[in-house]
Length: 141
Picture 1: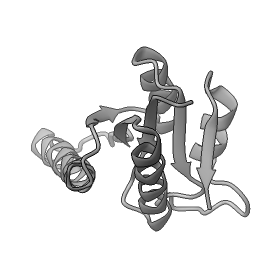
Picture 2: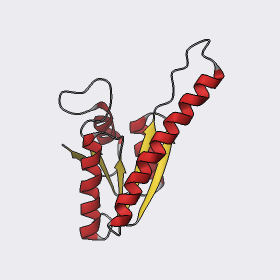
Picture 3: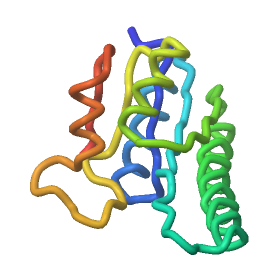
Picture 4: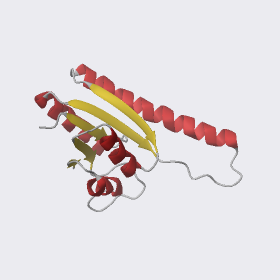
């Protein structure tokens, strides 16, 4: 039914569960997986040194790519075809945009991520993705 599945990960327990669920789903149905990690753009403060900004961006990208590589390794161990995407921007918008661009048929996302304020029922990113997506969204609790 779903040949291409996009999984959003951020290092949270919920995103780990989302990845595990998607891998199991893909393994049972011979689906291809895409995994995406989105880093928010920095809020630049007047007077912040350029070197500090560059270091923060480098650190964000390194951590994000490491997280993606862990997902790729896990999928490869299970014999599942996977592609990874590192993107900067507003997470919900970038997840939906990537799903549209690459014709993913299902988005899998954790109900809450690593945001500073946890929602009572759904995290703001998962809620926005479910509202904006043009394909089904599976929210993992």
